[in-house]
Amino acid sequence: MKNLVSKEELLDKYNIPVPRYTSYPPANHFTEEVNNSTYLEVIKASNHESPRDLSFYIHIPFCKHLCFYCGCNSFPMCNPARIADYIAAVKKEIETVTEHLDKDRKIAQIHYGGGSPTAIPVHYLRELNELLLSKFETIESPEIAVECHPGYLDASYWESLTEAGFNRISIGVQDFNTAVLKGVNRRPSLLPMEQIFKHLRQAGVRINLDFIYGLPLQTVESFQETIQQAIALNPDRIVTFSYAHVPWVNKLQLKLEEVGLPTDAVKNQIQQTIHQQLLDAGYEAIGMDHFVRKEDPLYKALSNQTLHRNFQGYCTRETTGQVYAFGVTAISQLTAAYTQNVKDIPSYIEQINKEGLATTKGYVLNKEEQITREVITSLMCNCSLNWNSLSEHLKLSVAEIKQATAYNEATLQSFAADGLIEWDEQQIIIKADALHWVRNVAASLDKLMLNNSKSYSKPI
Image (cartoon, rainbow, N blue to C red; front, side, top):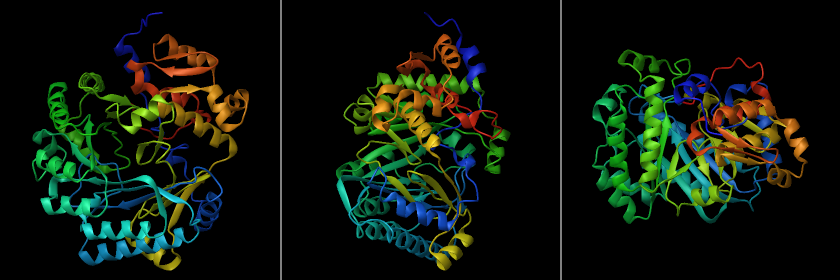
């Protein structure tokens, strides 16, 4: 049946706060009952759980200056001595955690985020890579990735990144429009992007370009121009993040209200326009915000319905590991639990120097929540859910899996009537023109969303 609901009606009905589901449960469910002792227990237990491969995340919280839109845990640059103290603490935390990991496990992924990891001297990043790689072997093609702010990086820094072993680099462009960047307090690239691409390509590095839509001064036409410039560069992946306005997390975002944020309708039009623009350019849509070429491993994983996601983004099963995270505010994602470090630098350094760990909160998942996580992860990553396949994977009956969730046929029928999904007792499929509402469908399967008063961002 043809969908009779207008785009405006869908926007009014579904553009409501729902979790992003980069984790399940979301991080705002974490509690302080989880501490260093809990983390040690789940680290040891993780050696006997799957996935067996290792994924490491390192949080570098420093920025040359703070962008107004940022929702990350970032701090203005400290003096060199404080940076050295911070890196020494990260190294000590790595030593503490890896002491309890089986040495026959292999590294599948190393990822640096922030803040701006490239705000600090590159030799620190190289030292951290060398430390991790000295402790474990790697899978055949591990992903070693870093997020970069191109506003301050000269040719020597880019060259040093490749020499430090990084084989995937995510460049945080956000927008090529200099007026937009000025409005959000972000510096444009120091070097021409063509020059950066030439050097990274010669070194065999895979390149992501990251953008944010929904910022002040952006229009449909201006962002089309930005994406067209990105397409001309031919990056391996283009990521188009929806700006999440969460001023209760970062008060700097209130400054964007002074400039003026696009309406939900304009933001929705931008999303739909660039989605089609990237498809027309030969990219394939991955989940809510990634676009890749058909030869990309992410597209192959999506085709096989084996795409995965963690706090660092989409990944294949080959590069999926339990995530052990280091640094201030870093979140570890293990099979049975999440743990998060303290959020300020002095406390982190003090606690690491005293105990080797700095856990401040987290969440231990019960069996039902572990099942729900598999359901929501499959839906969020693959935009579809096959109950029988999941039953085989989890070695549980379909009835047991559905019972663990908030599965409701009347709710699914409502989504179908509005043109968001196709479904029957065997599967749920998000329709191609409704991918940005996948969070809403996932939330309908989440028991924790029943009578939930926690704050979330909107899908658009």
